[in-house]
Length: 357
Image 1 (cartoon, rainbow, N blue to C red):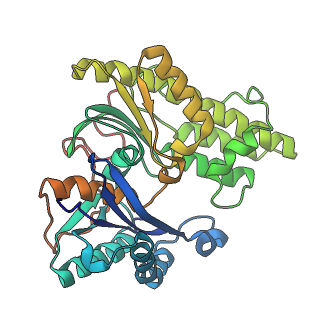
Image 2 (cartoon, rainbow, N blue to C red; image 1 turned 90 degrees about the vertical axis):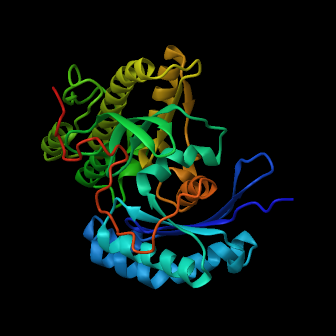
């Protein structure tokens, strides 16, 4: 019987130190043997956001321990590994460098293939860890640093259909939480606050809602929340603002996703349209419900990663590593960290560039 590949994934692009070992079963579907994520919430809480130098120092302190635990929990020995995959970008360069160097060192010491992974590609492929997902599919990547629609044609073949021209939706969640007074990291708590509020209390703007195709904008929404937050005096008003913000984001994503559906159908000849929503914000239950409703209306299949795989993790990095390993797509040991690394190599990376409004 042919040995199934064993891939170690390492992720240190921001403030999670993570390591994972995955393989695949007889049917060729991925199997997670271990997935360890160490958060740095306590390190950055007093600053209200991630401090790059502190994050990198924490990665250096933990990376060896976290990787050892991932290997031990997987039930294999380190020499059983077939390849090592590390996030090379995008992200904070001081953080990326820690995991990238560590992964290269392991691969080099054992003379195993090394695979540099795009963090966004990890999110793009993350649903493969819990579903039978085949190409092509439409991807909505929503996280703290990214908001974009991508036509995922194949591994390494991505066409960006739309993007935020300013801020990411996850950043808007985090900023709103901070303004309301929710302790860092507050973004994920907005949904809980919203349950206690009246979403019709505040009328918030939906920038480029009726123009710009499936491009998005959240800076104006953040500014409106800032102005209202200065006038808030009661807890109920905080709940109402959270509810109004949550509802506004839902409406924006519903409208822009519907436009992206049409773009996707124009560019793909497939009888089975699939819509993947990935990234940290994909864990938001209300956003999931709204987008599932849209998929039902438009006859798309809605696919989400497991909630535990929405945020930054190493299993998704190992997943990309597994796909690339089977195609012998390896990286040199001098592969650099890339703080900016768009999935669509032809797309202009600068915010707002090339976006016709």
